Length: 134
Image (cartoon, rainbow, N blue to C red; front, top):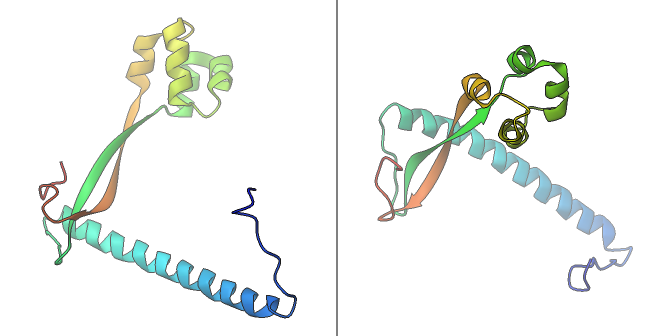
């Protein structure tokens, strides 16, 4: 901790009030985050159904990204126990490094890959991007 981030020890008489305020803030934030997640799910569904929600400031778009994963059971069938243990959670970078070094067959690894698509709700300031989020 630096001097600027070091916590100041409060007067013991102030501590109960500070703790109460902390608890209220934590509970408020958790409630707001839960509401945001629920609203986000509804808005994502509307966007996927072709709606175009916006207000005076923002336009809602879906941002899509992809992630490659290797299913553990199939990876083990193809490359065996030792290789599976080597990459533990089938970390993409580790598996690809083993293929690059020749320890795994690169073609088999590519054939084994699964692409996972992630969809995120993004609020763009109006005038910054097209409606499709591309």
